[in-house]
Length: 173
Image (cartoon, rainbow, N blue to C red):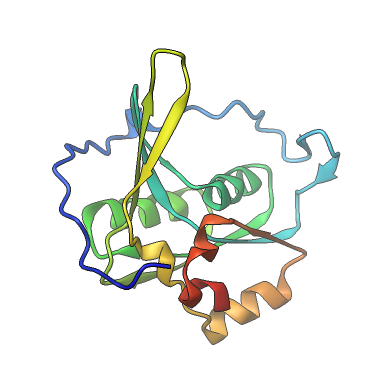
């Protein structure tokens, strides 16, 4: 763990228009089987805990983070999905919350003084990817609030991202 340091400034040009959001490959049928394990998600309460971030990929910038992706798809498939995370008080953080809410995901996303998570992916000549995470990021500071604990306690399933465990503050949540 590294001590808290001021966030690095970013010179990244960011366009967060809807055309950057990848189209879902999942059918709209709510009883679709999620993945190959055959779990019906329609009607279940799914609490997703962890990273909300933007991925800068060679072909665009996308909202992501494994727990966020699960929450978005679970809601699309008919679950009562909640996202527990943190974002910065910045344009991308506000956009992430707007997109979650527009997708029908309950947003238990906290605002912090840290910037919203941002990851830069580069692909080398062999096709291998390298990821650079801006640190610290807002999702490093997810607080365990009464609302968060109640959401998790009422959930039928909890999905937790591993990246959000890199900081002791989020590890408690």
